[in-house]
Image (cartoon, rainbow, N blue to C red; front, side, top):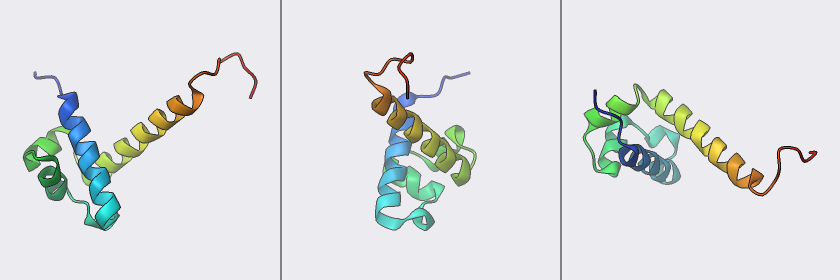
Length: 80
């Protein structure tokens, strides 16, 4: 089984964010994401089963990255 390509996932995330910025959530569908990312629509479905899964995963990843940036430089033993 072939491992998932992180570069394709990044391209899908970037394309989704660009579409969200320009067209809103209603303008996002798997075909538009694929076209914007420069990959086949079927490839998007290899990584994400649906638009809902893509958006939920992207939101989760964005929250994690934001939290990591905010927490950078702080020790886990520091008080809140």
